[in-house]
Length: 203
Image 1 (spheres, rainbow, N blue to C red):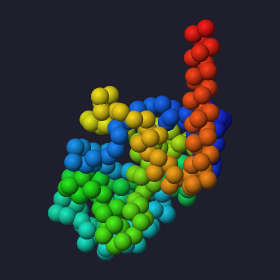
Image 2 (tube, rainbow, N blue to C red):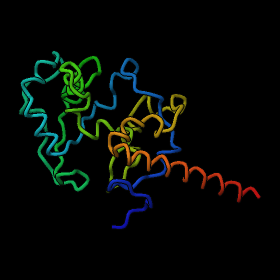
Image 3 (tube, rainbow, N blue to C red):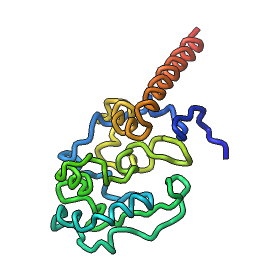
């Protein structure tokens, strides 16, 4: 199937709407309690295996709102070509939220890494990191379906920056420094092309 987007960086097609669509300036769990994490997430099989390998350490950082049985943390694996291994494994929902979300709205996987002096996203699934972006059919695009579930982040009055501005750190993590620099150039070219089209229409 031919992708509808033209630009490709490090194997990912780029949806240029990420440069213009709006979102909240930054994440603040004091406002939303980590609402985007209520529904669980799909992890790559490799991410699942990495998480399970440190299950005993994860248990130490969980609170009384979370299920302590690792056998109930994940759904059954399923085939999905958007994941590096070709296999996706969803996290379960417990007490109305992802099993790894604590009662303060913090991700236990990220909290644990920080507690241990590790890189904050060492254990965090890529799709958690990327939201409000998602990789769909090989393209880095906007997760409209999930955004529409939100009660704070989907309100226009709260959306003050572009998704690109909101997600710079996450995009750099995905694409690497060289890929991110290429994306910056594409952003400039794309926004200039929009201006030129607008000027041409107004003439």
